[in-house]
Image 1 (spheres, rainbow, N blue to C red):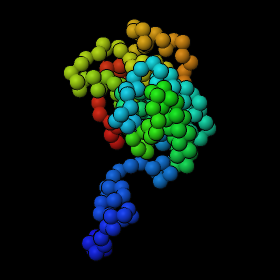
Image 2 (spheres, rainbow, N blue to C red; image 1 turned 135 degrees about the horizontal axis):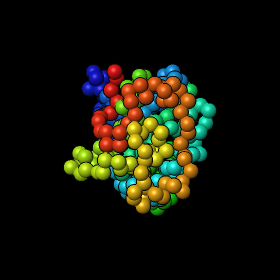
Image 3 (spheres, helix red, strand yellow; image 1 turned 90 degrees about the vertical axis):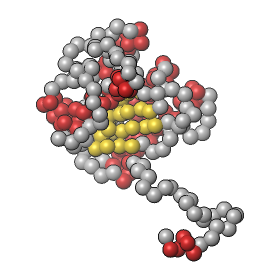
Image 4 (cartoon, rainbow, N blue to C red; image 1 turned 30 degrees about the horizontal axis):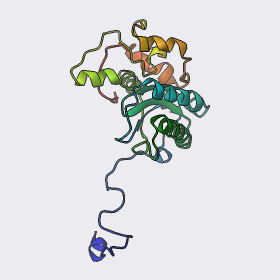
Length: 231
């Protein structure tokens, strides 16, 4: 701070007060995150403000193809997803920090290129690096699954809109999720279109995803709540 007071901007570029990343900015960098392979992660990708809503058929198919293409590696797997208007949620497994960084880089680059083409735009697509959260307990994993698969329902509830109790989000992997308390019923046209789409996600392999979270019981379609909390 004292050094900054002694320096003066030249007006010709270079150093100036307040330049650089704001202090305290919490941006997740996959290569810096350290975790054990037995822990899944909740990952969020946000797009720039000028990008149109992703909740339409074209962007959804692009996301599904990217999940299928890049989310089935031995060291990086995309287990669940949901596409909201300006962001994408993922539940992933990764063998280590480097595998997470590589897997997300491939996934982001592919999405940005193809979604830019779809929207007939150029340049940066995502607002910043992805944000990732380690899920260490069965309760955290269950909460994250509920949060991701019911995220659009949560947004609608906050707007005062109520969806049918057995409604599932066709812009997510909810149709293929096998942890629902009740059978899935596809009532809407957009939901029935999923019948012709092969499951794009990878199968879970770590205990917390295959078995651990189920100790807290299956998910209800209309179960709402905030982000995962540790218990």
